[in-house]
Length: 232
Figure 1: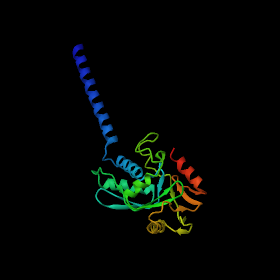
Figure 2: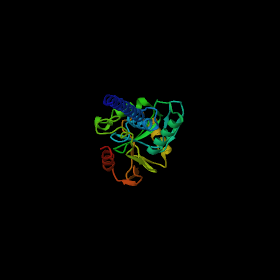
Figure 3: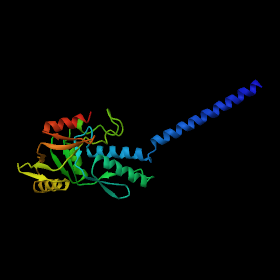
Figure 4: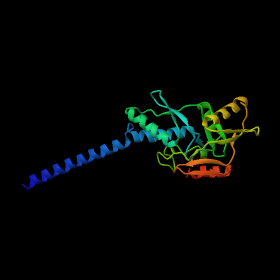
């Protein structure tokens, strides 16, 4: 009788262990499933910012709105970091089996921490621009040292309009919105294709922080300090 009880107990214990392991495997699969909306969105945000040299720990910030392209060929204009996140997640919900991440659509404009603004026409131009960025400011990669996965896909701030731009010839122009700024930058670049000096913003400027508050930035030094503080 005792022998039978021992056998029954061993069988029950073994069966319970198998169930527990299956449960853990199920949890692990769920947390690492590349087709889940959360995991896909997190990876896509990291990838877009890392490839663009923008966001936390990087030299630049996107000047919104920008356009992103999905694997099915559709595009979407996003007006902020949070809007980008919502747009990617919504697309993933409608395309549950997709695994290919969205990419940046050119041209787009970026703001450097020294206040210079650049219109970038292609991925090749973007790589050349990133080469001017110090190694410590090129981002730490997706989940790199000092950052958890998803940290890099965060903006530091969003530039608010209107802004005034000082061109390298010392003339200034005011941009009421992103389209106007892009036109100013594009026209300057077209007329001065060999210029190594980039247009820059006239301070003070206004930015919106990640918590939704608006902050006035008085100088290039203040902008650099703000950019570097959110990268830590």
